Image 1 (spheres, rainbow, N blue to C red):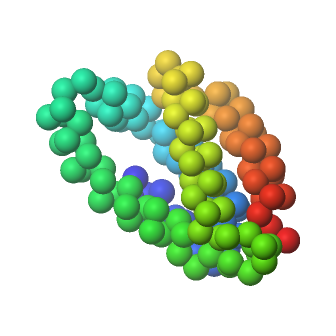
Image 2: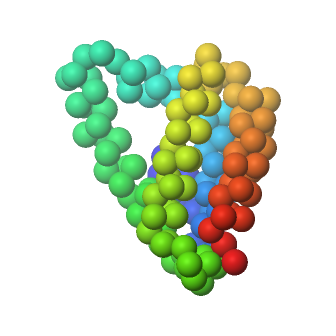
Length: 137
């Protein structure tokens, strides 16, 4: 996960470009370490509260750091003046997380990610364009 976080390009202030690039980097890391991501997915879906709590303790700080960095140095001037930027980012986050959850439900193993991942990113681009059109000038 640190590999993905460290490679976030903070020079590009376009939030939509940044999200796409993070998704692309994440896809490459998932294809490189499919068994690790299969294990993480199974652990998150675990019924045991102790396991879920343990995972949350380990992944929580990583997730928080990645979210903080994702939204660092965003060019808010790209947003339309009549758009509440905070709400727009929240809508974008909900959409992104919901779409990721849907994709993970359809995936049987991260070993099968290559074609599925490319299709997933292409489809995300279509959703992203709708949101970008709605929020940007």
